[in-house]
Image (tube, rainbow, N blue to C red; front, side, top):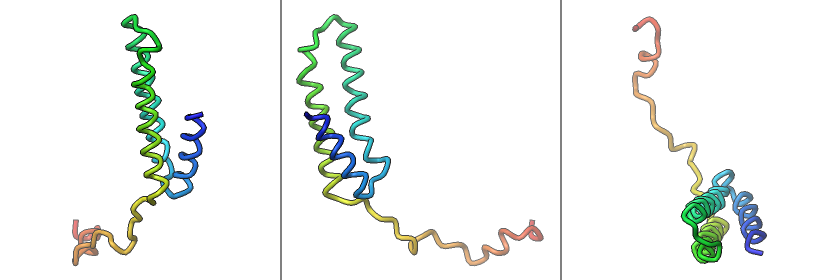
Length: 97
């Protein structure tokens, strides 16, 4: 059930304008859960020992996705770019080289 919520929130964040960055919370949560599973399995731990930490990873991803769906990413202003130097034509000119 939580996975369905995460997928829906990811789609909503993607449509809100986050693009590929909307996949980062899920990638982080699944990656961290995978690493915890590998370490827990290698150390002889049981699956029930990892339930709470994995749930907290999922909860963190859901919270991040909720924040992303509520807030659009900061738009870059195309008029606010780095100004060229006053003599930029002379710098690029092959005759001045």
